[in-house]
Amino acid sequence: MAKKQGNLPGIDCALLKTLCGIHAPSGEEFRMKDFLLDFISKNKKKWKHPVKVYHGDAFQDCVILSFGKPRTAVFAHMDTVGFTVRYFNQLVSIGSPDAPMGTKLKGEDRLGQVECLLEFDKDDHAFYKFGRAIERGTSLVYASDFRETENYIQSPYLDNRLGILNALELCKTLKDGVIVFSCWEEHVGGSVPYLADFIFQKWKVRQALISDITWISDGVEPGKGVVISLRDRNVPPEENSSIKLFRFLISVEFLTNWKWRPAARAMVVNCNDRICLLTGAL
Image (cartoon, rainbow, N blue to C red; front, side, top):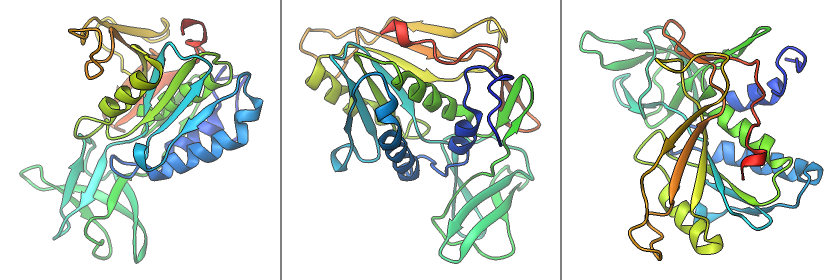
């Protein structure tokens, strides 16, 4: 799909579509990590300020980017919900997937590509419907279904592909800060604790912004600007504490215009506002 910057100002729809199609459920973020490292390598010369990239075994599949003298960190999780294939066509949830019967799932095992249907029994246990047995341990995610109109984007995994897109947009102009692409946020608590400890030990950064999404709810209206949740907690009990790292944690849901569509189980966003709103905040 070609970019439609005129209709969706500030959003690289082609890049967003690519991000939404990358298979990276919790525990298998390596594909997203590889994509990001390649993207960073190809684009960093275009960015206004130099960047240093941290990745490797010590960070598992996480990636940290540092610019200048960091004062604030921005976190964007790379993983998604999904399913793991069990035996007898059973599926085990990764995170908290929520989709109706008949939803298309995709994956790959040693016999090839898989595109199957999600089913449930009378006790609401999840199963797959496919023409053969899928290898146990195979991960399945929602099949790509990226839809773009003049004002809306609808796709599985806008959580948190839009958060990633926003962080990459920020990289273009960020002078002093840290960008963190983290893992396992949809499952078992996430990788932020050890990443936060690294950031504190290296740069003494004590404040963070979370690049994530939300949906329309009471008090959150579409088209009214960015959603900011201020959580005044996790204050370190003593100055040298690096476990409870942040003096404050601001969760910024960069696009307020999300709406949960139960029939499609996808996130929809009205894209009247630009997504990169953080450059002046660090």
